Amino acid sequence: MPSPVRRTVAAAAVLAWASAGLAACGGSGDDDKTITVLAASSLTGSFTDLAARFEKDHPGVKVKLAFDSSATLAQQAAGGAPADVLATADTATMDSAQSALASQPQDFATNVMVLVTPTDNPGSVNSFSDLDSSHVKYVVCVDTAPCGKVAAALLQQDQITGKPVSQEVDVKSVLAKVTEGEADAGIVYTTDAVAAGDQVNTVQIPGTSKQTTTYPIATLDQSKQPDLAQQFVDLVLSSQGQQVLKNAGFGAP
Amino acid sequence: MTDGGAALGRAGIGKAPAVLVVPAVLGSALLVVPVVSLIWRTPWGDFWSEVTSTPVLQALWLTALASAATVVVCLLLGTPLAWLLARVDFRGRSLLRAAVIVPLVLPPVVAGVALITALGRTGLVGRWLYEWFGLTLPFTTTAVVIAHTFVSIPFYILSVEGALRASGEQFDLVAATLGADRWTTFRRVTLPLAMPGVIAGSVLAWARSLGEFGATITFAGNYPGTTQTMPSKIYTALQSEPDVARTMSMILLIVSVGVLALLRDRWLTRP
Image 1 (cartoon, chains in turn green, cyan):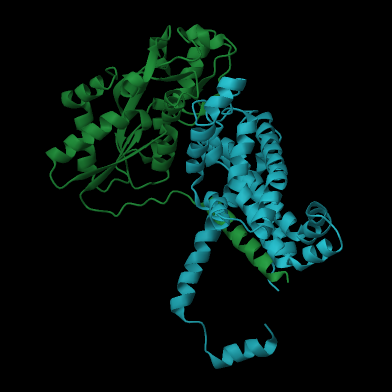
Image 2: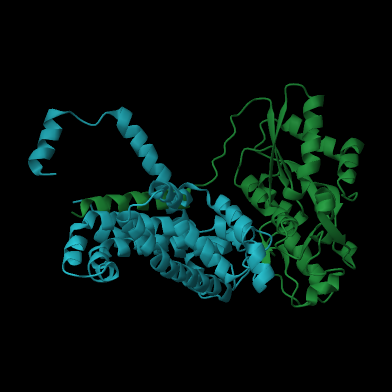
């Protein structure tokens, strides 16, 4: 009577393969009046705001926003993903999408990193050097992501030898580990600390301004709406756009 | 199918209609093209030096360790649970079976969020573990095994429960009339009869554990040597070194295909 067993096993096997292989399905119905903006995770708040303003100023135009790690987005842009504008959290990732850029990247904001802790501060982290004590569980971005590169440079610059407990894939995950109280501290951008508000305590990192991150923005070759794409870039660079970014904690370029 | 049957098919019901063939070809292309592209673009020249580099070996070792530990936990916890579902009549049995199946359909990231909500340092159960024993699970290899077990054990349980049901209860009854108690019956009669299901379930759970990513990175984190398994390493490598990511993907692909071949020969061929 092996047949029912085999059938169960076969069904389970199919499910195993299916669940392991399910990837994000995404596609844009190419609406003529839609532009897609790929932006670094740290731009979530300010670009959502700017997109709403853009839609108000351009009736009938819809702005689709995709937030992810800069490296992932740059790779998607270079791979021909249907998008119009790319904004990354550092110049190196923007350069990696060079082949897909329709315009010269323009710097539109800067950001510096800070240390955040949960409000009850379970690891008693009150200064950057506290990361060196062995009981402190802190998290950083993985060193392949821009936020991880800056964090690594800061740790080295301030001679911190204590190791992180985890290298998260992007800065949002770092912040989440801190706000969830799983980590005692995390190195995030000033803008993330601003966005998290009173969910975190902020601790300044000595010499953080020496590791400033510059955010470039550019239009993409594959854009079907190059004029609208350029207008979005213009909005980001305008005084209105700069004010939104400033409110979110970004520095001027 | 016999030759006669095939001939009858050709002569009697006509050739396959395009309306079925075209989608079928598209479907196969969707499945085959990405894998072939991966093989094509893998930098085979650096394959061996990449495979034997320390970070990759570290991730490979952790993946092997975690998946082996997962199988052991499945055997220890899953076998009794499968037996309970197959042999013992109790209130809420169908509810329990549903609960066992839920992780199968749950997106792995959701599994990770659920695990952190339960076992994180501020979680429902994790809070007490931390307060009473100073124990924190996230960011440890144990957390990796817990996450892997959570997503893998349903495959094991389904497989073993199926085997137990298929082998039938009459042998258990015979053993009982011969004076064996239930534990002896389980060890000497039930389990040996269900062995094919145990083996198939172990292989399935192992394969699922090998590919586990979402729950692990969400619950356990990502640090080389302690929590970074192959899929996590591949995901992070893709951000800066796509070729390394392809090489590591190829390793997992080879292993998965190997498992599939093993399963096909032993367990998946329909009678």
